[in-house]
Length: 255
Image 1 (tube, rainbow, N blue to C red):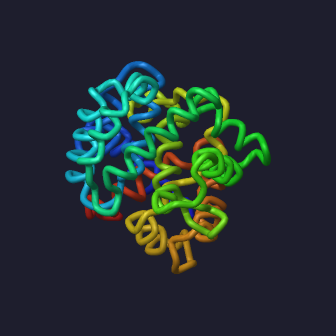
Image 2: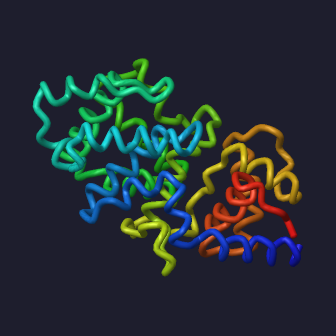
Image 3: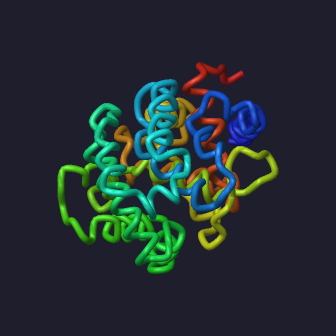
């Protein structure tokens, strides 16, 4: 097991650098300096983070352009005409109607719930878990519209979803180190509670290394993997996302 830990630690050092930003969707929120802009850009970029990374980055850039590259100001002050203009957006199954609804729901969160951090923090404190944070966020996000076609774009952990994209966003916003990739601008949720963004790359490499036995990439698999990663580093277990994802997406050797 020490061999695996040493391998993962070496890969974290390899990938957790500023160079990582150049090919990753996290570059989108890195364009901003205001906290609210960073978190809104992170949430919206993570929402469309499936498929080829170049396409994700391209479409997230277009999304920011549609929001006049001032996401928080746009969320709070966009006119009906501005909101209608969002309908030209499309990324796979997430289209302009979804984006328009997302912006409207974000406005509700910032006007009536003190912002994204406040909602996630309130959910976390219900049970001191990211699971409760994700449940609570989804309830608040759709509180004024109920179940609709757009609901599928916010993961529902109560159905055993691994919530890869939301967990990735939380890594970006919560995790804090001196490497400059993750932002660490949310400090009410501890890094030790974070859950790794479990995608196909992370899942496959984890199984090859013997860290994960469950075949499905679901919440149960996520919990199994986190139980192992927290043994390796109880305070910052999701740092191993860099290692597992990097080895998978870059076809990196275990050597």
